Image (cartoon, rainbow, N blue to C red; front, side, top):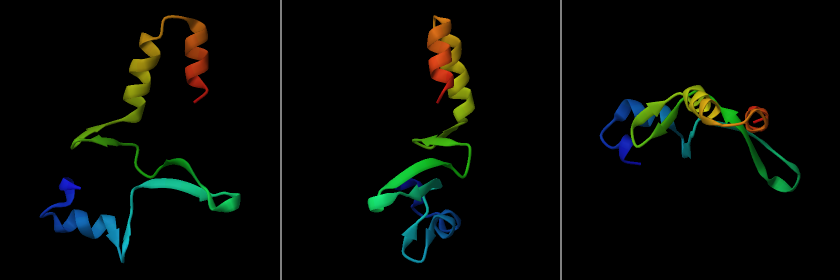
Length: 76
C-alpha cells in the first residue's frame, strides 16, 4: 500500500467510503463466491512499474515454441 502514502488524489480515487476500489471487475456467483472477470484499466501495476497486459501476452505468445502451445494460450 506504499503507493498510497502521501498521495491524496490517489487515495480519493481508490478509497470510496470504507471500500478500497481495486480496479477489478467481477460477479457474485451462487453461494456468495466472487468470480473475477477482468479489470477496469488495461494496466498491470507491479511495484510501481506499469505494464500493458497485451504486451505481456505478446511476449509469451512470441516465445512459445509450438503452434499447439499458442492455440492453448490464446484461449485465455
